[in-house]
Image 1 (cartoon, rainbow, N blue to C red):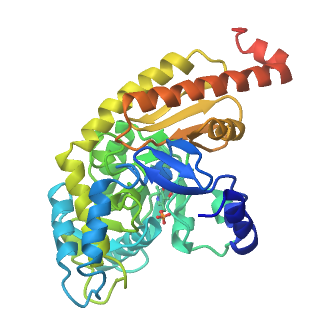
Image 2: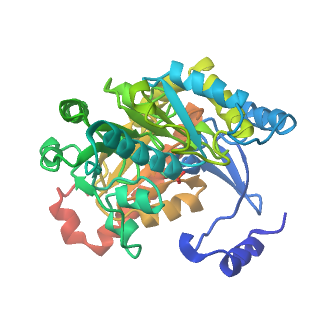
Length: 416
Ligand SMILES: Cc1ncc(COP(=O)(O)O)c(C=O)c1O
């Protein structure tokens, strides 16, 4: 291993610049800790943006990769793949779904969901009924179809023309959804908890009302659980917190804990329109990816990881509220269980940088919402450490802003 500067220089010279300048070179990980190429340790409370839910190099994942790599890595979907059908069975047993399709990433399974919704509608209602309602501030991926589904101008800009037939409602506002439903609509797609959109949880009422509209008009309800699923919100799937089921659900990220895999789950009456030849993937559902996914799902169930996320999430939130709740810079807390947002009254970029300088990795969405997605195996001591770093950093940040805008800070209540 060379030093961090060496890799930064390579990145600056050889990588496409779409990720911007990256200050940290990560080289190793174990549990909730990662270390950089110079050996500096960090507490990773971002977990690959909700990928490493079982922590880094979880023994069960490492074992599944090693064993399957020595048995059978790949074959075409022209053949039945044992680990693929075992994983499909397990996901079906644990969810609303009857059938599963596998691909390699979140965007890819969302593409599959969009294609399936269109095909179902065409099969049952004829042509011309292909429009999909998604939410503003959503995030569904980086392919052309999924940036179109994503209700954020900054993600779409420059890639026009986008796909035809997407309309954007306001999250948690059922009237804005109803206003967009026409005889051309075939589906409504949303994240039960928006991740990139500021860690914003749906209300139960909103999901129930969207479900009712879908039932009324035979629209398919698609949940994107790529970030909020796989135990993070205290149930294996986030919508199980609400008890409102979809027709199609996508998961990816933590289904592989770092190994690329995505799954699209659906009901029998919808899956049946996927006649032979309508959809597919070379790598999707391959023996290795599915062995890893199967080991992860089994571990989550056996070790009650979602229940753990609910418990440790409640502890973490309580400690965050105690330490930060009174601060003028903190507007409020968001999210569910181990999907935590801290809304600030100022932009959060400097807070993220300062936390990293003190050994805590987090990030920021929508400009001012700190996003914390710790591995679900985080201990109370690790949560305490994160809270202590955040409290220090936010206190300093608050003082900095107070100096810059004393009048404005005073006007907010004069607590300091
Ligand atoms: C909610 C959601 N959907 C889709 C995606 C896209 O997944 P991928 O990057 O694996 O294509 C992401 C990635 O951040 C996501 O958070």
